[in-house]
Amino acid sequence: MGYKLVVSIVPHGSGELITDTAKQAGAAGGTIAMGRGTASNGVLQLLGLGDTSKDIVFIVLENGKYPDVKNAVTAACEQKKNFGVFFALTVGDFCKAGCDGKSGVGKSADDGKDGGTESEGEKSMTYQMINVIVNKGYAEDAMAAARKAGAGGGTIIGARGTAKEGDAAFFGMKIVPEKEMLIILVPSDKKCDVLGAIRELPCFAEAGSGIIFCNEAEDFTVLGKK
View 1 (cartoon, one colour):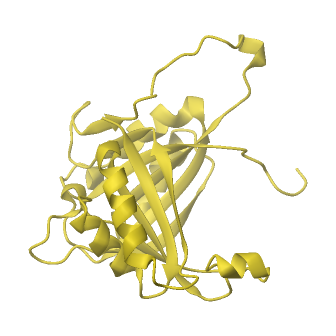
View 2 (cartoon, one colour; view 1 turned 30 degrees about the vertical axis):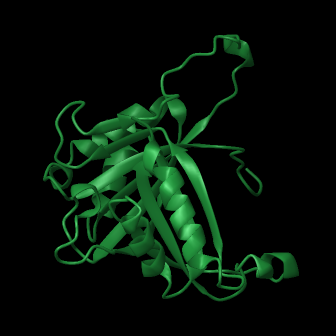
């Protein structure tokens, strides 16, 4: 079973519209992070990415549910002028807290395929973006474990859950409003070590305490002088 990460960037206060619509279309829930746009270009302003407060909505869902969710969210926003943007990324690995071994681990349909067209010398280094969503207070523990496994550093984003009492929890996560999202970029050959280190944490052993998903980072570039 493959997964997608659906990302929506909309005006602040509109994140619940996206998650509520997505849940009605079959998604389990989502996570909303606070951000702001910084664009001054007129075209980007039209995309809803101007210098205003934004809700950044992250939803992980099965590939089969993606068309319904996309159509539902698009329809819910079609009357709103310059409302924001919506895009999706393929999730390479997905796992839930409290699962042992391979239990609770999902992989994309393309995971593990080997095209066999490049020689070892022709392969360029690729990077993976590891995304960890945990209850507030545990992102630093996850980052410490990732560093021991070879990661250089990461970024922690304060966020909140969207499930309400009586709703299905987001992929089994407990309904706790305060969340932290940790984003780590690592070379692809270190991904498995970092994932394993985070999953071994005591705070990640309890069912419902977090999720991890991965994406391949395209066009990775280090800015500035080395």
